[in-house]
Image (cartoon, rainbow over the protein chains, first blue to last red):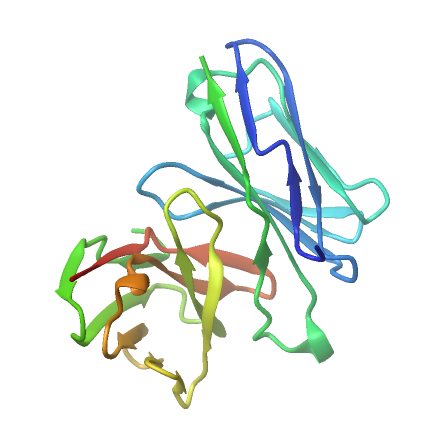
Length: 117
Length: 109
């Protein structure tokens, strides 16, 4: 499967615990995104990497959240001291701007569904 | 005000009907637009890009009106399998995809 891969697919954790999610983008894609989606809402932008550089972080991303993409390939999203409000679907996406085209779609992974109890 | 706004629906339509969704965007500098489809508890999947001249893909037609800052999606001859949430997306700047809340469509037998 050459699509975006996320692990784990589901995570149940107790409030206060730390969790880490992994995303493997499509191999030639240099752009990687993390989004969060709650029920009835569209995906909300969290952060963006171009290769290994994290170029933007949303204000939604409190200091309990940290994301890395150490070698410009896979990425991790860590949430420390989880809260019930962190319960959501965390989606990873990747894209590659072909020839500088702006009409470049993002491809999404299947997401990690986090439940904080 | 959200940067991309959609009517959340739900739109309940009979099989075979034609249905249209509109979406407005507030950032006049946005250059690229997309429609994604999302099935329940699944990831968004690209349905189609939206070009300035409008584009058609089978039963689906997308249009862009830059003057009024809205995008539309028309689905002809609706199928039961079209039931899903349709997400309108604007590319803000050169890399940030901004999603609307989505419009729920239910096609009824």
